[in-house]
Figure 1: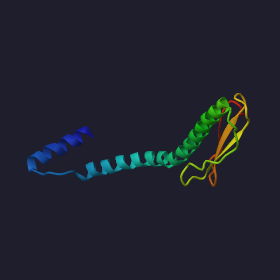
Figure 2: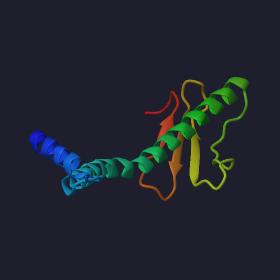
Figure 3: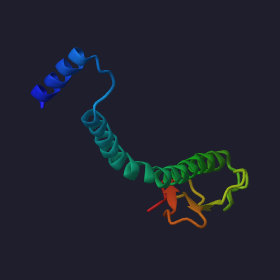
Figure 4: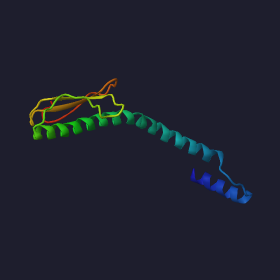
Length: 122
């Protein structure tokens, strides 16, 4: 292959040709095809991973808020995440002690499993 490319380069210099040969263009197209074949499956899973991580974050933030409420002596009740604008994520709280509460975040209409956070979660 190296000898062939060297011969092409010498021929181009002798004849004054400029531009790319058909083989060079085919090699570039093949490389781009391989990169696309590798990247497309990776990008397809990104949205599902992002939704799952968002649920984990909501559950963890809720667990922090519940711990603060329990420590301050406030009443802890099950609640939905109304403060999430246009959200279909529901947050449920179980347990009322600092060692036994569990916050579960669920996204309605999604195949992503519910995510839980807190010391009382299984």
